[in-house]
Structures are given as structure tokens and as C-alpha cells.
Image (tube, rainbow, N blue to C red):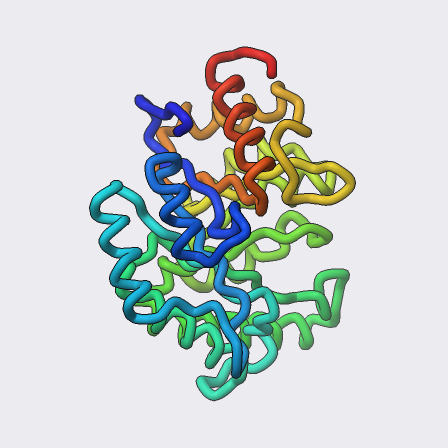
Length: 266
């Protein structure tokens, strides 16, 4: 387990660390982390990875016994800003995930708010329509989640830094600050985090090695320490998720974080 005594945030990782199902991953991670991000991406008709009632019962038991919380990452293919109506396919898919995992009382539901059609500029009318649909969709999904503040909108690579600010001004959703996405685009992650933390429920962190979601061993200790210091300085009480997807990347990332906390080099 990564030693985090004295720190206010809950350090976690994803439910895809060992090559097994979600429940097996949670059993493996219990005692090593304080939060597990349940990656519920495969929820189409037919085969899916939504936990059964019995699996939810076991996840609840493990959480209670191990002081383990859960965050839930909603499917990547949601297009919530396409059509702000309750019957839209993306809203229905988000609702299925939330209803399946709701008894875990997740700390947050992480989501991508797709804006590819307008991220590089659009007419004022098109932007206004996109914003209206995005806000209405978040209201609908937030009602299902038990409050819009449980929804944590993630910053994405390739988007302007301030792209989601109009949404955040209109509705009281939370943020997921993805540090890896900021690093991938060459931004100052510490500066962005400083301004975003008051609305942040979840922070994602991962290294870059040709692509993102790699081990934090690929990140300089200076950059990693800057992020950790900001979280400590502000007394951040949310979740810090090491968003990697293999045991090797998890273990080497854990070692990198431990070294950064101690001011060492790995």
C-alpha cells in the first residue's frame, strides 16, 4: 500500500489492473489503495461488464471492511450534448450505469462531455445550442445520480483549457482534473489544478510514454511533486486516481508517488 498517512486525499486506481474481472481487481487492490475507479465502459446490449446484484453486495462488503470507496467512470462513447432529452441513447446508457452502481454510493461519476463538433470554434448560435443541450443532459443524468454535484466533468486532451467553463458557470457539476491530459497537451498542470481544485472531486494522474495512461515512472519527479504538493498544500479531500491499466504500471506508479512524497528519486 502507498503510505499516505497525514494526507487528506484518497489515493486510488482503476478496476483493470490485473487481467481479471472487476470484483477480482477490487479484491486485489483492497488494502493497497483507498478508492477504485470502476471502469464501466462495456454496457451495450448483450455482453457487458455491469456488476450483478451479488457482485455489488460483495463490493459493498469489501468497501466497508477495507475503508474503500468507489468512483465510477461512465462510458466513453456518451454524447450527452447531442440531444438534451430523457430518451436519448447516451442518457439511457448513463442511467443504466448509475442505477447498476448506485448502491455503492460512489464518490463521483466521472464523465466525458463530448464537444468535438465545436471545440475548435463555431458560430454563436451553434455554441449556444451545444451549451443548452449539454446543461439539460447533465441535469437529467444528475437527477438520476442523486445530484449534479456527483457528476465530475473531465478535461480532455485536444480541447482548449477553458472549453468547459461556460458549462461550469451554468450548472453545479464537479470537475475531474486529468493531469495526464494536461501533460499530453504541454500545459502547466500545477497552475491549472490551482484554479480548478475548488470544484474538483476527482484528479486523474498518469504518465506519458508515446501515449497517455502509462506509468508515472515516465514523469519527472519535479512535475509529479508539483502536483502532489498542490494537493497537500490545499488540503484536497477528494480522490486521486492513478489511471493506469496494468499491474506493472500500477506498481511502478506507486513507487514513483512514494518517492515523490519523500523527496527521493526513483
